[in-house]
Image 1 (tube, one colour):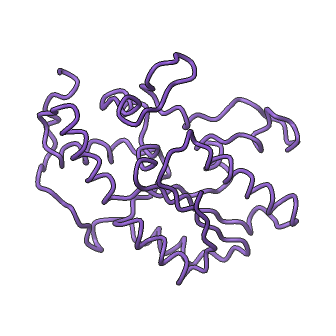
Image 2 (cartoon, helix red, strand yellow; image 1 turned 180 degrees about the vertical axis):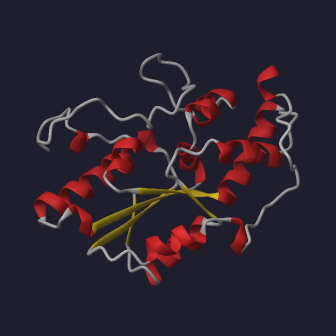
Length: 215
């Protein structure tokens, strides 16, 4: 299986638990301290055909248009762990590690297991009318939601666990930690890795006063 040849990364030592200095805590602290009026964290495990992305879009539109809250006073975080954590990685990882086959995600363009992150790319619509279907304000892609200020979070613990599962499923010769490093080197731009999502969500609620929702 040539696609899974050794990655030759600098360290294969397991790092199951992140220490404080191992990740971008300052960026997470900024999220906690964000002064927005409407702050909401979506706790997502199942991919569920990406339906949670539509819920995030609906929340943005509801806050802004329905409740007349300025866009700069809205801050949403998408806390992806479990299977949904794989949505934080780019097309190259979906192809290399056959994530669509593993996660049972079908590419609507091919009808086959996805070899790309089908939830990533934004549409080319430019309308500022939220009632038009092709408007960016109705776009549920990760890129479109990021452009509206949604911060996507990736769980390091989940990535470690999922790398173990990939090794077992495909008999990959690379070490688990090499795969973790490979995946995390291919994060979607703007995604923030947190040590453990269950802890991050708790702090967003208790210290950041984010309201909690799970789909």
